[in-house]
Image (cartoon, helix red, strand yellow):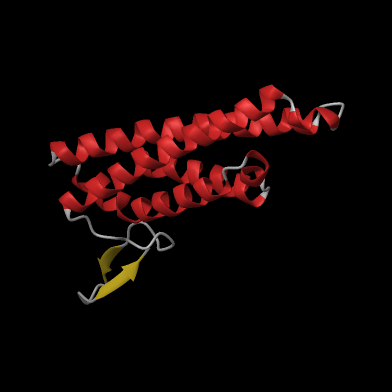
Length: 155
């Protein structure tokens, strides 16, 4: 579950980065840092999800990660909504109004805090000695035997 949801969060994050929403809100560097850290975590998620049944600490780690992914998703949704409102605002002269400045400050603070939390969770993964699995490879493969008893790799 964490693996699939984290992929959704990463997709949302990369979409916001491509649309330069981070630049508009002044959190581009934080967004890119967050994306990089989440990608490194994503590399070990399949192994973690396989081992969570046998290991309570890994299961707890995955729960922390899932909670963080939901928090990040909420922040990204809020960024997207705010920028949509900015694009639809009638006047460009109110670009510097106090509410907008306070919002940028608030979102920057929240992005920094969530980045710190993700860094802590990313550091914890080292305790579990999880294998990095390439993200773009097929998830599972299995071997079948021919009638002669020779293995045939299938995906």
